[in-house]
Length: 339
Image 1 (cartoon, helix red, strand yellow):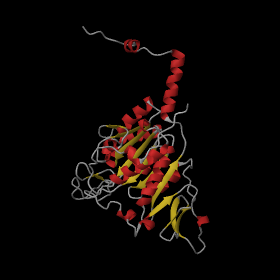
Image 2 (spheres, one colour):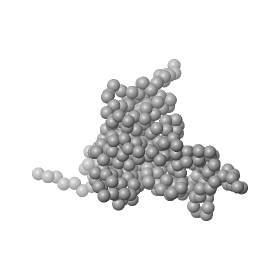
Image 3 (tube, one colour):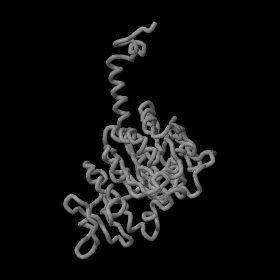
Image 4 (cartoon, one colour):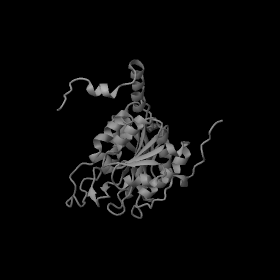
């Protein structure tokens, strides 16, 4: 007799906890998208685990009717890695923020990415510390006036996607809290990826950094300031789809379509390109005047998965040497007896 999975709905992943984010916070939209996508994945609910660090985003596990763990500041990747190693059958998602993941948790983040642990990482980026009431964060722009930088920040901000690519992440994507259809599609692609899937989600903090992404999200300007990158499709953008991207030497170039320039002259997006340099160029566009901000999957390649390699190694050693003895291990080498 074959067991069949129950048919889940969004409601099955909602909890009885009061959602304690500020009214209007972008976190609500991200929560809604995740609760909508999880029922589609064909995974038993008891196999899901959501792990977080500290910050507004890190309340996420309380609002997901799954197993979860609210860890300490910046340590969600380390705890999630340990869980995935010991229970590779679980579907482990990490909810973190730009401060949690890129400041105190920066070291854990880059090593999680380079190891290619089978985790799905949602980095909520609102360019501010919201939970502690408005200090500038590792992604705040130069000149940001905040409670901790009253005369403007002089720090150069991290570019999360560039950082992830530099750490050899095998899946790197970006979406926006209020672009629900795009966000859900991106979450589905991340869920299907084997290895670390890193998604930066541009998210608004309407209390301490309202309008952080309004040049990308406002209806009047978003078509001119964003570009949806889709595998196998030319890089075209603009309200009238009249602009595109092509290579000029080693650099990207924005060109108007027409006057002899057609879509055949543009870059065709290749998220599976083996060289991360192409995706890195895309990840830097939002810091270049006149270039659009890319949304979608910048890179998705296959590589050995960390937990599979570690567990295969353990099985091999046990097969050759037998199960270990903790007592013998503790007594091995130099020991001292204290009287």
